[in-house]
Length: 122
Image (cartoon, rainbow, N blue to C red; front, side, top):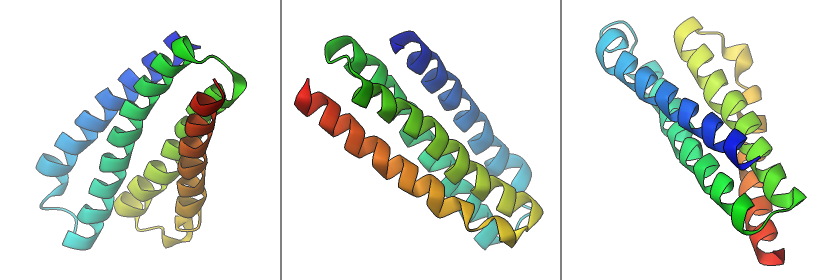
């Protein structure tokens, strides 16, 4: 699992950098300031959790267990739902996607709790 989370984290970081550059160059003149800021929040949280996945990959080698593994999957799901919904809202204006964002946020929070518990128990 350590390799899986390291690869997912690395690819997520790659995508985060690409989307950040896309926002800075292609979206700056096309989106209003509020939607651009929303997009950038998605990029920021994706990058934070790409790094968190690298930490999970390392933690699994040190404190293996289902709780640490669960934290990795919660980070993946949370980042997809949280950042993905913000990207979609920004690019399409589909405000009905708004309720998905907090679900992703809760998954991210749960991921941090699981990571802490997994290391504590390990």
